[in-house]
Image (spheres, one colour):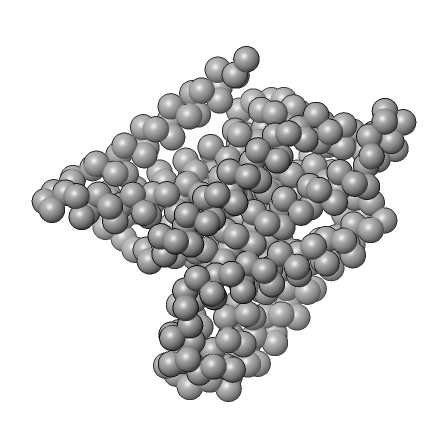
Length: 314
């Protein structure tokens, strides 16, 4: 039976979606609606992907203060963009086929994520301090290398890197969006199919193993889903580090449960609500552009500091 609170969240998403799509809709309605729907779909896909990935990552790491983005996804994405522009030049980067660039970026991010998570969690998910510090250090290293490479660029090429390094929903390729949507659905189905195993994983390795769970295999499966979700969403629109922390924290607060069969869809819906509602407020009501990601990162960062200082018992 579906939790009523999840149905309420779905109804809220439908309401903010209707506002985003039809608020102040004018002629030519068909053209404007098609543009709005593409942006709306991108917001939903990215929000749902990051929300789901964060819940999975927190279960693996046994800590609700962490997100996959904190271990350097954004820095790696910026480094990839910088090296592409440095190698190919501004004109060569602009001529890259969008689909090929999306595929290369997704593949590199997935492989790097699997390697990184495997190294950080090879001794289990108990060493949270090492996990966070290693991720932060890798992020600083990649940002430093990217900054060094950016000094070699001329101003026009540097502006290209800057534009490609921030999350934007205004120019999402429809083919890439369709691929990302399929990946999201498949990952959601895969995550829900192992929801009971995730419930056992949340108890910890020492407790889960005597209960018959193949803990190491499930960690690998969950990490693969996390890597695919975060890599796809990052390659599609760019990095949003702390969105997942907001979605996951709100899902836990709203549902007050540890069952992943409920937490995963709730986090996915809440992630989509945050982006769609935020974009509606800033774009339709305030008439602002490229502001949503800044606000989301600020709110998520503030929440992260609050959780660190509070030191919640998990």
